[in-house]
Length: 306
Image (cartoon, rainbow, N blue to C red; front, side, top):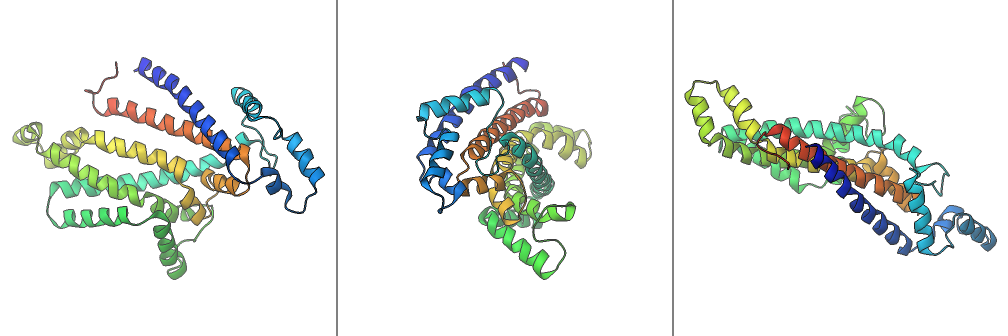
């Protein structure tokens, strides 16, 4: 296992370097001038020229890329063009809030999705099964921004139970976590149902029942554990997507996470903030995939990595 983790970490280096190159080139060929976004339309040409020189934007692209790589090697992601704050400091302030939102959404999705899938598999074709499939289809069909706006309209505007947006205690976390986790509830319910149906029809389950084990032990200890591999796959992919792609949810609910930070950086053409955030989020996604692969071996001893 140790050698597998080391190999995966080494393979992540060229992957992240490729992400860095693509993000650097795409941002520099995109239309718009970051200096113009900083100073506004009324700035004189002398001020614009001086800022471009200070920011080294007049250097050739290979030279700019070399300076950026040298900074990355030292752990320096640069400074924001707009606020002049270190990008690393901004990320360390914003990412815990994104992690909090993603963790809450994943907890809700896991509890609801897996539970619904297990009960659906125990009574295929029954009322719970049909209800679960209906919820799954609805959850997959509705986009996150529509679900978010609907939740705000119902629970904040109409019922006045929860705040519509902002950051604070648990009450502020409920609506964005539900909106973000809705699609995962649907995917997990369908995936758990399918995996549990295969497991409940296996020989070892029939043997466990023949030995007189209770249905709770048969379902929980034998069937569910052997159905965990596809469930872990969905959990890993969705959690990585939550950490790196919760932009819409954070924007709708004014959640001060890293996704909203990236949106603001794109709107202002803040190139260092965009590049640093993209590189950090790519590293997070690689790490989540690695943890998912390790979880396979923990869930199923038959899974080994040579």
